[in-house]
Length: 274
Image (cartoon, rainbow, N blue to C red; front, side, top):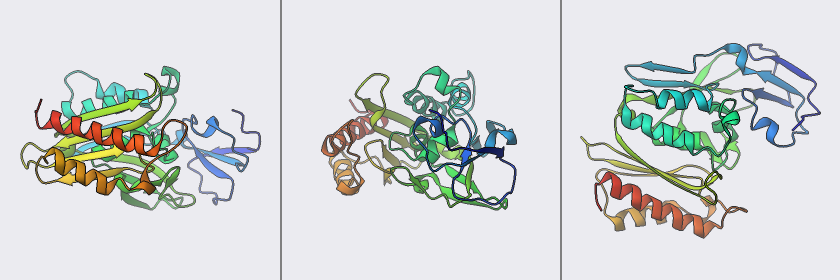
């Protein structure tokens, strides 16, 4: 879609003052997907030339400008570190309902900053206990837990002029066993419910994350693998009516039912139950 009101594109490294009508541009697949009559100037992040994926002993840092294709390539590389964590990353990448052309353009940061319930990179970052590096125009940074980055449908904690620099995924989370379940109304359609689970085989804790069915990520944590009843009760308490997504793709109560069903499957897989 043409953004006919845009009059200027500037280098993303510029510190020219932020003004109403400015927007950060990375892949642009979300930005150009719908009308933006309020937009006047785009600030191009690709000029930073950030390394897409950086691996260290403490974990993985994924640049905001890393494309879905680049992240999937890292996740599916043979003989890489943290096979369980990379398997979860791959599953979330493939949950993004887009063509390969979009995969090669859309960015991890763009998916997070769009804040859409079906944002698969949101699911990934929350499941792996990610931390978002947020940077202001003055270069100052702050960190935000990925679970708190999206505050509602299309809403994030970003202040005017701030950008998402990267997402850090800790080694401890990447090393845990994981499971992913997803439902969409079409094999290549957007997710209507996506549930992730991670299990620490040493400490015994289990964390279940719900996205797509909710307007923001919802997680429930247990010190040990819960019974089916305990999990159901925790989800009923956490998935309040005001958090459930309802749109043309599905009713709120149906999404709640799917989230509970998928969470039960995740629990069974990680508890190695039949």
